[in-house]
Length: 123
Image 1: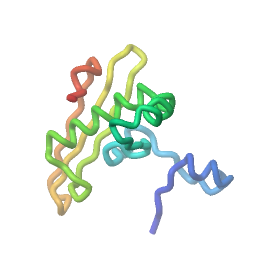
Image 2: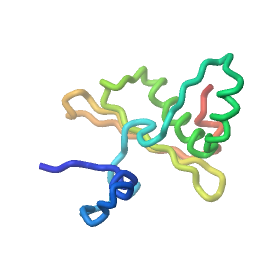
Image 3: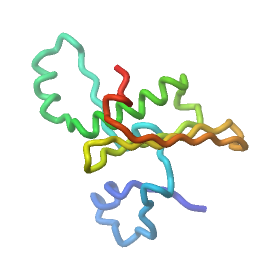
């Protein structure tokens, strides 16, 4: 009997008066790369690549790459109950929390690690 909406969307629609709770980092793990915008461009389209490159936010890209590496290592898909979130800390380290559940939710496995971003990002 509830719905979970993005804070950014509620702000854009001037509906912040409808907010009853803002979830903290420790309360809920989102799906991998949740909230990040991905843009796909043809590899030979140099002009568009130049324009798009200016929109990139390196810290967000690094976090998404970490999260997607976790998903790939588990051979996950949009049908797999896998969650993960990376966060860059003030000291230059990355912190990652991940979760994998059985389809029925009866078994849940969690992981949490911190380290240099290069440790987490597998290209």
